[in-house]
Image (cartoon, rainbow, N blue to C red; front, side, top):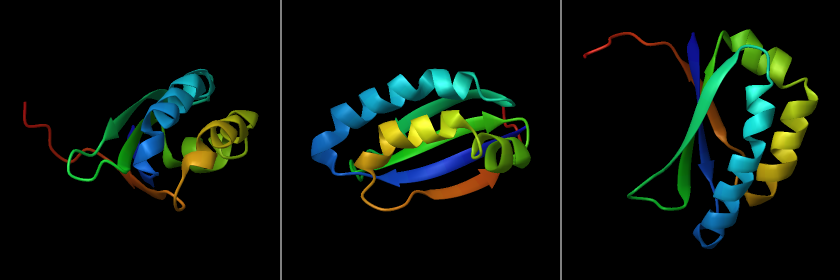
Length: 99
């Protein structure tokens, strides 16, 4: 299992509409092969910055299968208009579980 972490910058005056668009995209993530869930967090110090965290079975499930899917296109149609810059996307694997 890996985690996609996408740092997304938006115009903070559109926050409510952006959050609604991400919520509307939930079924496209749910239907994606290898997707185990997602969350969207808003940065406290920088309200224009969000962190989308998506749990994937593998990097391939995200970068190849999902990105080639109709669900990805629908996600980008919903959320993309709010992006102030292209998202910064990284992947992580848990190294330590503290408790």
